[in-house]
Length: 294
Image (cartoon, rainbow, N blue to C red; front, side):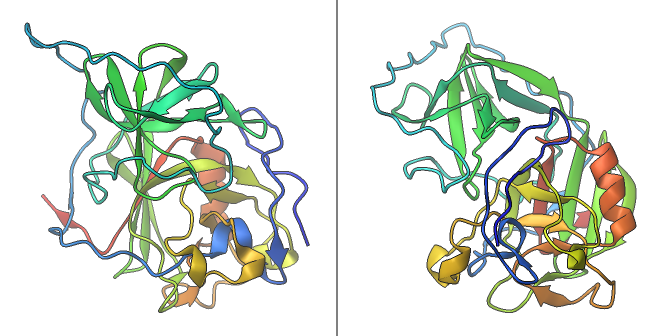
C-alpha cells in the first residue's frame, strides 16, 4: 500500500508517496536502536527571547564558498552525510525562531565551511520550516530535515524567518508528552512509545508536515511526520526503508503508557486533533528520558 499525498495543513500540497504495510505507517513507525547520551537530565526552562548574534568589533564573517554544480537537494529521503552533529541534542530550551527557504539555498557543514546539499522552499510541495538552534554573525544553524540530531549552517540571504510559539517535549520514562506555548505548559498527555530494540529516538527534531491516516486503525485523524528518520536504517525491514518517525493516534487507547510501537509516538485522538489544530510545521519536538524542573 502507498500514500499518494502528504498534506501540510498550513499551505496544502503533496509531500511524497510513502510505503506502508498493514497496521504500520512508515513515516511514523520505524526507528533503529536509539542512541544513548552521557548527558545530565534535561532541566525545563522558560522560553528565551529570540537568539540574535551580537558581532564583536573584531569579528569577521566567514565567507560562503560558492555552491558547486550537482549538489543534491534534501528531500524526504535520508539527508546526505557530512553535516555536523547537534551539540546539544537534549537541550529543552524552547527554539523560538524558524527559517523557511525562499529559493534553493546551499547548506554548509560550518560557517565558511563546505556546502553539502541544497535546501529547497518545500519538500514535494510542502513548505519547509526548520528551527534555528544557533547563530554566528552572518550564519544561522538550523535542525536538518530527514536526519537525526544534525545541523546545517546557512549564510545570509535566500530565506525568511518565522516565529515559533510552540514546543513539544516527550519523556520516555514517564510516557508523557507535554505541549508548551511560549515556554509554558498547555497540556500533558500519556503516550505509547517504541518497544525494546525500536525505542523512540532521543533528541531534538521538528514537525515536517501532516498526512491523512492510511487505515482505520489510525483513528481517522491526520498524522504528523517529523524531520527524524531511523537511527539504524539496517534495523528497518526492507519494505519500510526511507521512513520518517511520526506522531499519531490509534484506534483505541489500550496501550497508552506502554512501549509497544515501532518507534512512533502514539497518543489519543483528542490530543492529536488538538495539536493538529494548534501547532504548525517547524515546531520543535524533543524526546528525552526525563525532565527535572528548575
